[in-house]
Image (tube, rainbow, N blue to C red; front, side, top):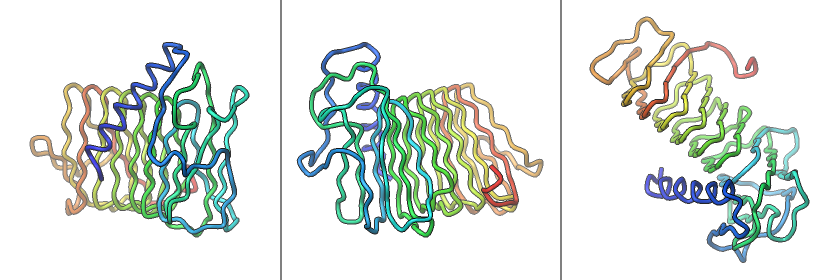
Length: 259
């Protein structure tokens, strides 16, 4: 996980959000290698290991489908053009998806919904997704590492394969659901609430740092020592930092299909 990169990304996304909400006629939305990107959605017959998405306003949904292709498209609340359409770039085994063209253009109140469809058999090494006021939904995606950032949008992520995660939120709520026990993980939130569901037999240790947030668990066997909460062998390690956001952890012994 790239902490410095994540901090910078959140900062830049906050700047973009301020510009959008203030109704500025010209907004700067820039990224590297912009000349390598292609406008619009697509269906690709490619094998990817990583997916990186930057989205500003609307919704982002990542789902599975029965095809062996990677498909992605957008819908918008207004007509898009060369500047405001989505763009993508397949860099080796990494798929990059951007909200709009790199440069300065009129943003106004543009809202767009992105849908990404991945093969059921595909196992990603990493999903790196930054959203501003967009809600992010990941429906039981096979991925080893999650790197998710949001400003005001909510996150609901389901995965039975996640091993490591780093999830940051300013005011958006976060809900991470897995049927296993990830080895390592980190949550950061200012005022958004965090909910974490994992397997019934999970053994882990949580370091919880907060100003006024509460820690809640459905495990009566939880041991508390200072800021550390331990369940079972404490093998998995999680860090949770909030200002006023609450953290709740719960356990289920079932598949993700019931959610």
